[in-house]
Image (cartoon, rainbow, N blue to C red; front, side):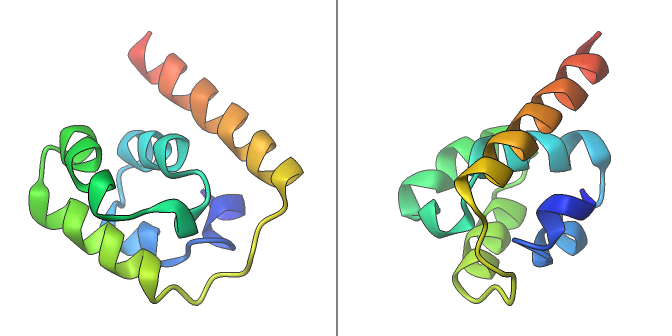
Length: 88
């Protein structure tokens, strides 16, 4: 959470639950890639269309810093582990 929050700090306030946060980070990757086509998958992850819309809107106005591809790979691996452990 902390590492990804440097890239997309607004996500923590929208999705405070660790499991859902990890699933969102795993799906979103680079916040700049979010668009209207992301609404349906995010709604499925969050089970809440309003939160999904808030995530997309926040990504467009985010104050977070850019993220390197290497950091993004590491964050994705950690998020995948958290999701896998939570599912276990």
